[in-house]
Amino acid sequence: MSAREISVEVVAAKILFIRGKKVMLDRDLAELYGVKTKELNKAVSRNCERFPEDFMYQLTREEVANLRFQIGTSSYGGLRYLPYVFTQEGVAMLSSVLRSKRAVQVNIAIMRAFVKLRELLLTHKELAEKIDELERKYQMHETDIQVIFQAIKKLLEPPDEPPKPRFGMN
Image (cartoon, rainbow, N blue to C red; front, side):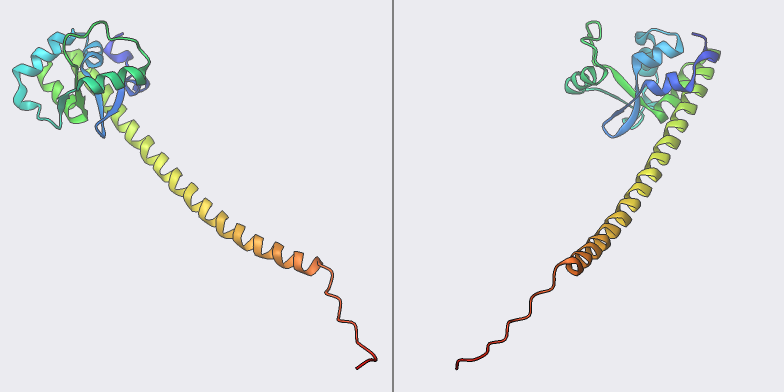
């Protein structure tokens, strides 16, 4: 796959949500950049000052196990090392470490995917807020409708019979 053929959808499918952040696995980034994972991680380690913890971090064994469960794969082909993940800022920093034309094109595609994902999340948030508002209105109307039905039912009930007068014996 050439760098120009990388679609936002392909990249977006590789964006994961781990530790409350949108991230990409080192192996997925290496595949997109057309390098081996080991080469990507070497380039990063030679420039570790550019990758603070909020740009890149290594997954725990538990996170890898959860990831396997989420993705539905039985293994990652025998991992020797726990994978690294890169946040959007870390991916942007990769462009300064990997200096090929392909890296520039891949970075552009990845940044577009992160932006698109952010826009989609905002749209979903707005939709969720509108749905909540409609539910609140519906619940208010439902309460009003129940009161109306109760009043109608009361009107439909036969009137109480007046007490029969007592004549006579006292």
